[in-house]
Amino acid sequence: MFDKLKDHEFKIFRDIIYNESWINFTPTNKPILEIRLKERLKKLNIEKLEIYHKLILNDKDELKNLIDSVTTNLTNFFRYKVHFETLENHVLPDLKEKKNKTKFIRIWSAGCSTGEEAYSIAMVVKDFFDSSWKIEILASDISFNVLIKAKEGFYSKEKTEEIPKKYLEKYMIQISNGYYVKDSIKELIQFDYHNIMNEPTKKEFDIIFCRNVIIYFDAQAQQEVVDLFYNTMNKFGYFFIGHSESLFGMKTKFIFKKLGNACIYIKNEGLT
Image (cartoon, rainbow, N blue to C red; front, top):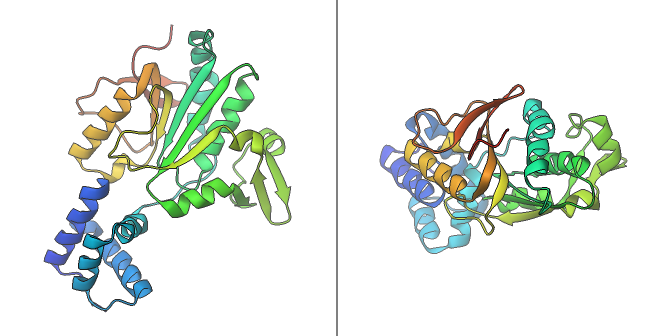
């Protein structure tokens, strides 16, 4: 097993990962990449980095496993509650008025991780609209492992502590050591493996959540993915990003908007 990741080795693997996912490892994050590589080599019983390098060049599945291993999957239900308050109190009422004829809402949870964000969105939207409305939620991630967990829809009691009581009682089923998401919520969501570098399987989104994803990209990649989001949204679409992320200084047509206590972006002036 290699001891430390040499500078030229770091550059090789950093570039491969960037070209496949836009995840940008800086020299500061070199130790993280080193740990992830050691984990993969140990699991595959490979001693030398040169051998592993050849493997990922010829084995697309192992390349996906490597990308999977370096992704960050920290999430929880109703993370940044002000976003969900703004969704319920400002965004959905506006879209309800504007889309009252079609009664169709399409949402994308990009970088959905283990599913908590997508299920949180689904609970709020399900509770807001009556049964005459059609709701579609695309939840995507570059990690197969987290998507398996998301599709299962089971979470420990600790994981569900942030779910408001009204949603917990209405949309979750309690068992001895945790909760399952009810089918009435699951049926609103399509979980899909997707590399954010590529266009999604669907377009014309009314709302996009992509929180704490582009923070791992460099400026060029951020620009490209934000443009992609803009081009896949409906007129008056709403774009949620992480509280530590910003489009400031970026060439984008998105319009900054303060709604309630949340700072989000809209495709056009959607509020009357």
